[in-house]
Each structure stands twice: as structure tokens, then as C-alpha cells.
Amino acid sequence: MTARLDNVAKSFGRTVALHPTTLDLGHGVIGLLGPNGAGKTTMLRILSSALPPSQGTVVVAGHEVTGTHAERTDARRRIGYLPQEVVFPRGMTTFGFLDYIAVLKEWTLTAARHAEVRRVLALVDLAERSTVKVKALSGGQRRRLAIAQALLGDPDLLILDEPTTGLDPEQRASLRGLLSGRPGTVLISTHQTEDVSALCDRVVVLDAGRIRFDGSVADLLATAVGRVHQGPSAASGAMQTWRTGTGLIRSVGGSPAAGSQAVEPTVEDAYLLLRSSAPEGATA
Ligand SMILES: Nc1ncnc2c1ncn2[C@@H]1O[C@H](COP(=O)(O)OP(=O)(O)OP(=O)(O)O)[C@@H](O)[C@H]1O
Image (cartoon, rainbow, N blue to C red; front, top):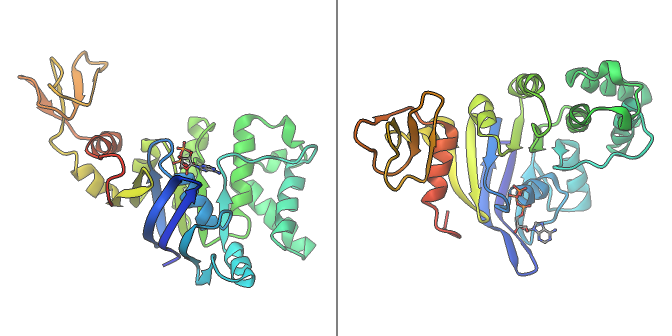
């Protein structure tokens, strides 16, 4: 097991962002889904050591993130973290930015550090842009540079907060290739349910600061089997309906109309159905 949250909770004043949560993260790619304000970023920031929890312990690669300064420093060396927004220092080149982050991560040997910077630049396909100023990069290239800084040092736990935002389809596919081949743990927060179906072994759904689902993608899909229909008219009481390109109406949930057929659900369908059955603040 790479990481564990044990009875971790976080409040900001009177807002409970995360209720007491226990979660073990083993090897593989884990998707974290949830609506705006569910507590995803809060959970990721706590795991990355960027934010102290109000209670509970966090252990990453055998080091207690919530422990002594020395333990936290050891844990940090094993963690790569892509925040939702990365602020780039002004005037730096692509290479210079990564080198600066590597220095902050206490890589003291220059030759080894530069080799590592070149390695991660190649991984995100930015080797050719290494001498370009960050401000001259496109939005997607900047996002890839932000991903590259999280990959420095080949961390055991890679935490990515909405990594595919701003990437074009080729870049998203190439990021999937990069992440699916990793040996350690990758935890990805995303609003893109296709990323979860394409990439994740496991999916955790957070809602109102509590875990609503934790299981395989197949288990999540199984919860929606027989609950998504397509037919000439909408299912009554459906939570979502829309006319597809074929002219048929696709309904998620509800009682199917005459002449409708059950269709294979997607992760998005299963997620929507799970959300619709979730009373706000329900216990995990
Ligand atoms: N620094 C903060 N100060 C006060 N409240 C905060 C802070 N950070 C988060 N919150 C609150 O905690 C709750 C969870 O926020 P969080 O950012 O973790 O959600 P999220 O699931 O990442 O949302 P999104 O999908 O919009 O990024 C929200 O109610 C939010 O307003």
C-alpha cells in the first residue's frame, strides 16, 4: 500500500470540507470523482502535505505526512503533486522552471538534476521547447509543464488535480499512455468520466465531503445496468434525458417508455445515478 488516510477530516471554519475518512491507496490508477465542492481538492492537498488535516493521520510510502517535520520531508520526496492551478514564476524558461522545482525538492547534484529535468521534459513531449520562456508556451503546453514538475523524481504517489483540463485529445491520450504505464499509485481528480473509464482501475466518488462509492470501474458500471434506456420517448421520472444523433431518446434512470431498450451504461450514467440516489450529507 502506498498511502493511507486514517480518520482524516478537514473543516474551514464552519464548513466541513471532508468528514472523517479512511482510505487505503494501493498501486494503480485511481480516479476521484465528485461534484464541485465535494472535497476532492481538499483530500488531494491533505495527501500531498500541502494542507494539514483538522484530524487524523496520513501516511505515504511508510512516512507520516502528518508527523514530524523530518517525516513530512521524507514523505514529500515520494510524492508528486499537480495542483489545480500552477503559478509559474515570471521570466523563466521551461527548463529553468523545472530545474527550479527540482532544486526546491533538494536535488543538489547538478548533473543528475539536469538529467532528470530532461527526462520529464521528454515524457510530456516538451523537450523541443526547453529553452522557450514559460509565458510563450500555449495553455496546453503550460499544463504539460505543470504535469512534468509532478513527475520529477519518479514519485511513488502521483497526485493530479484535474490533469486533463486544457489538453487537446491527442495530449489527453498521450497523458493516459504515460500514466497507465506507471508502477506506483496515481490518484486523479477529474470531472471527465471518459478519463476514468479509459484509465482507472478503481474509482472513488466523493460527495459533500464523504465517500459515496469506492470500487472498480466495472462495479460502478454494474450499479447502472438496466437503468439506462433508449427509445422513442423519455422514461418517466428519468434524471437525465436527451435526443441522440439517431433520433432516439436516451434516458438515465426512471421507468422506461414502451418500445425502449436497455443500453450499456457509461461511467457518466453510473455516476449520475449514484448522485441522484445520494441524500446531501449521506453517510459513507
Ligand atoms: N481554503 C478554504 N477556505 C474555506 N473554504 C474552503 C477552502 N478550501 C475549500 N473550501 C470549501 O471546502 C469545500 C470543498 O472544497 P474542495 O475545493 O475540496 O472541493 P472540490 O471537490 O475540489 O471542488 P471542485 O470540483 O469545484 O474543484 C467547499 O465547500 C469549499 O468551499
